[in-house]
Length: 404
Ligand SMILES: [Zn+2]
Image (cartoon, rainbow, N blue to C red; front, side):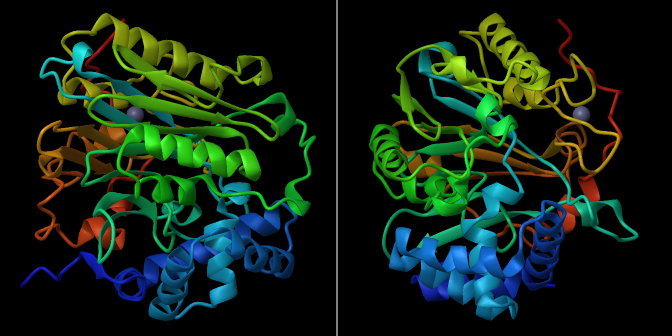
């Protein structure tokens, strides 16, 4: 059987239509999950839809056109899909760990980037399959008429990126920061035009360098903060930039050499962190330890192993995060990138869908490609089937590769 074409190409209308049609079932499932989770948080559907319609003014016409077209393709209500895209961070915060190393810290001299994406599950979801509580993660390949091509991992139906790479050689990741303000829900974002981090990540990948992308996002969130405090990391062959953004302040860390990482807390603005957030502390310390111990000889394979690290676990405090209950934040997917400085379209990506300690260890659980070669992507990576297969909370113990 011929593999169907999985690349979303063309103008924003065509890109969205392809996304919607291709991922129809997964989009519908994620949207249902979103409303269950919103309900559990006491957020009212109509109010969220109205808010999303107002928020749409904060984004480019091209992005809104793409979301409209996804809604049509997937046969879902436009207002609801706008809420799913633009109010997503309020309902499903993007937990996650991000680790990166600049050329002087790696074996090849190329920048390396890793993100594990962690998510909660919808508390009120019902269903025979455990995965139905979680959002379906898919590989999204976009080749727009204007601007750079993009590959990343997204929640089906979302135009935003949990993590991704442009064919100009920029990688991006995001993570919520668990601050005291967030824990106490001290800031009421209902009246703000609060932005969504994963959409900003996608917008940033339209830029020509990591620094330009970070400065663009910094300006955006200085004007309107993101719905929850958090970090956005942009990394290219020479520069890594971490944007930390809270409700009333922002900070930039520019990394030209060595290593850097983030869990779900701030480093520059650490005074804002919630001291009861043990998981972020454990993951940040462990990520720094792994990167520093291996500095100078870091490889993509090592980054994949870090993504499966179970020290302080396996559980909520390890880099590969596991849980007892679907409402816990646990790892759902992972991306490793090696950026090719001279030929960015030949940058290498490894994308794992499902639990990192399982997906990285099975030939069907991850995919390895260069930015310019996605035409033969197996369908299961785009329609959610691979993610469902490798999504489990059961830790994989056979290969405990790196013990301190
Ligand atoms: Zn694991």
